[in-house]
Each structure stands twice: as structure tokens, then as C-alpha cells.
Amino acid sequence: MPDPPRREDRSAAKLARRDGLHYPRSKNSVPTSTVHKALRNRIYSGDFDFDGTRYVSRELWQEVQDRLSGRQSANRARSVTSSPSVT
Image (cartoon, rainbow, N blue to C red):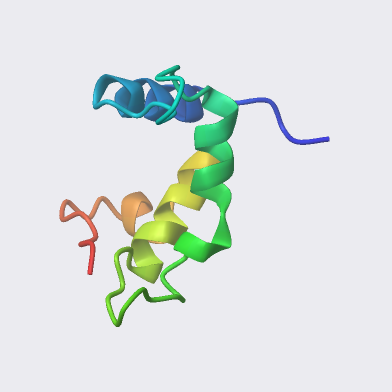
């Protein structure tokens, strides 16, 4: 059974809906559980590219996983102020 959505999941889903994430046909909002599944999907891990372009760096994907799991990444724990870039 999957873990219940965490506060971070709900925040990400809320931001996604605010920015217009919805189902194309019904126009219904995408539920938090769907956003959570997408954020956990390894296809976005930075190990894959699409048409020769990598949209998410491995570091950014790992930081998202750490936040969703309630852990801080090593970079965040050291108070590094720069955010990982999307490549």
C-alpha cells in the first residue's frame, strides 16, 4: 500500500493545479495522488532523455525524492543556497 500523501506532496499538487494542471478532456483537477505518482516516477530521474534533451537533472530528481520522503538532501543539510538546475 502506498504511503499517504505528505505535506510536500499536497503543496506540489496545489502549485501544479494553480499553474493549470488538469486532465485535458474533463478539465478536472489532477488529484494529489497522481502528482505524487508522477514525482516518484523514475522516468523523470534524470537518467533518461527525450529527443536528446534531459529535462531534469539527477540531482534535482534526488532532491525531490528526499523531500517527499521527509529527508533533506546532503546539499540542503549543508545549507547550500544555490538550487539545482534543470538541464
